[in-house]
Amino acid sequence: MVEKLGKAMRREIMGTTLIKNAKRIYTFDEKCRVFDTAYIIVKGNVIKEIGTGIPPPDNYNEVIDASNYVVIPGLINTHHHFFQNLTRSVPKVQKCNLLEWLLHLYRIWRYIDEETVYYGSLVSMAELLLTGCTTTLDLGYLYPTGAGDLLGAEVRAAEEIGMRVHLIRGSMPVMEGHLAEILRNEYGIDTDALIEDKDAILSQCEQAFQKYHDPNELSMCQIGVGPTSTVYDDANFMRELKAVADQYDGIAHVHLHPRPDEIKICKKLHNRTPVEYLNDIGWLDNKTIIAHATRFTKEDIAIVSECNTGITHSPSCHMRLGYPVAPIPTMLKSGIRVGIGVDGGASNDSGDMLAELRLTMLVHRIQGIHGNLSPEEWLGPKEVFRLATTGGSSLLGRNDIGCLATGKAADIAMFDLNQIGYAGGLHDPLGALVYCHDRHPAAYVMVNGEILVSEGKLVRIKEKEICHKANLLATKLVSRLKNE
Ligand SMILES: [Zn+2]
Image 1 (cartoon, rainbow, N blue to C red):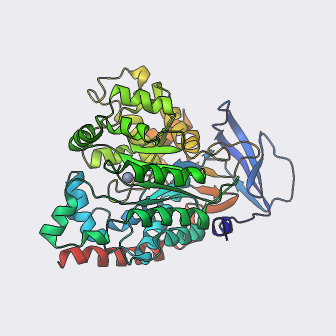
Image 2 (image 1 turned 180 degrees about the horizontal axis):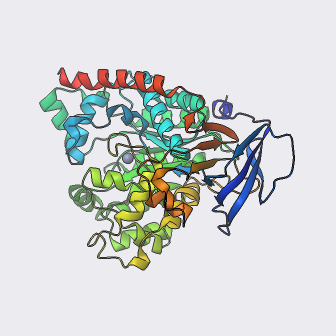
Image 3 (image 1 turned 135 degrees about the vertical axis):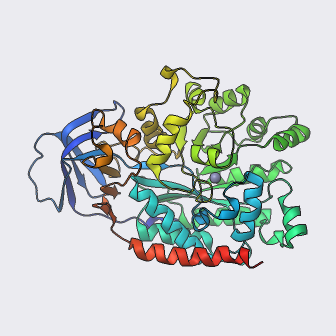
C-alpha cells in the first residue's frame, strides 16, 4: 500500500520529442549555459540531449518548432494554498490587514469540502502551468470537521492535470491571535470544527506520507507537514510534527511573518524570538521551508543561514496584506536559500508565476524599503529566474528538476517572443520575460516529458468547463457569508 498512490501519478512517457530551432535556451545548469538556435531531445520522462544547430535525424513522435521561443526550465512555485482560489477578490477582504482578512475568510472557508478543494486545486495548477510553472508546493492547512478527504481531492486534481506536486498536509492546531474568541462570541461559530486536534493531526500526517509520498527520482507527488502558524505554547507538539516529517525525509513548512504581539508572546513564554524558538525546538534545518520571513532581526537571519533553512518569498502577498517586505537581497547575501511562491488565491490574488518573478525583481528596489539598496545590489532577471528554478528545487530537496541538462526531468517551458508585448525588447530574451509584457502566457509547457500546454492551451483539461464549474462553486461558497 505504501507509496502506491503517489507512484500511480507517474506516467511512463514512451516516445521522443524534439524541440528544434529554439531562439535561445537558458539551461540554469551548473555552468548556467545558454544556447542559441538550439534543440532539446526528450526521451520518455527525461532530457536526452541539448545541442545547437541541426538535430540528429530520428523518428520523433512530436516535433516543436521553437524558432520564436525562449526556452527555460519549468518554474517551481514554493508556496500556495489551492483551496483559497475560490475566494479570490472577495469584496469584504479587499482592504484588510491579516487578522481581519482571516476573520472574514474563516467564516467562508469553514464550508470548504472535497468538491471546492478539487476545483480550487485545478484552477490553481492550471494558472501556474499556463505561466510556465511545472512544479508546485501547496500548503493545505484547513480541514473542517466533516469536510471529507481534502488532501485526496488535491491529489486527484494533480493526477488529472498532470502537474508535479509537493503537497504539505498542513494543519491548524491553534487559531491566530484572538480570532477563535471573536468567531465564537461575535459570529456564533463553532471554532472546534476548524481547529484540529493535535493527535489527529499527527496521525493524519503520518497517513498522508504512507499513502501518497513518492521519494524517488522523478517523483510526481511528495508529502510534507506543517502548521499554518507556529505553536508557541506546545513545543512538544511542534517537535512531534517535525519528527513525522523527518521520519520520511519530508519537508516541514510553516508561515512565519510574526505580528508584533506574536513576537511579544514568544518573548514572554520563551525569552526568544520566533526564529530562535523554532531553532531551539529543532525545526530549523535544510528540510524546513519558512514562508514570508518578515520582521526578522539580523540575528534571526544569521540563524536561518547557519541552519541552511529555506525561505519562500511572496511579494504580492506582502503588499496585498500590508506586511513589511522580507529583506530578500540581504538574505541572499547571507547565503540563505530562497524560492518564490505565488501564495494563496485569497492573498495574491493571481497565480501568475512570471508576475511574481517580476515583482520580486522590482519590489526590493523601492527606496527606503531596505535602507536604500544600491543598483548593484538589486535583483535582475537572472537572479529571479534562478530563485524560481534551482532555488525552488533546492528548497524541495530535489536534484532532478530546476535545470535543463541530460538526465534531468523533462520539465520545460517555452514562451513565444513574437508578440506585441515583447516587441523591441529582444536584446535580452530572459529579461524581456520579466521586464516586458503584462501577461505571461506560455506557448508550450512540458512536465515529465508530457506536453501539458500546447499553443497556449491546456491539453488535459477543458479550461472553460473548469472556469464555469469553479465560478458556480465560488458563488455558492461566498454567498453563504452574505446570507448569515
Ligand atoms: Zn501562505
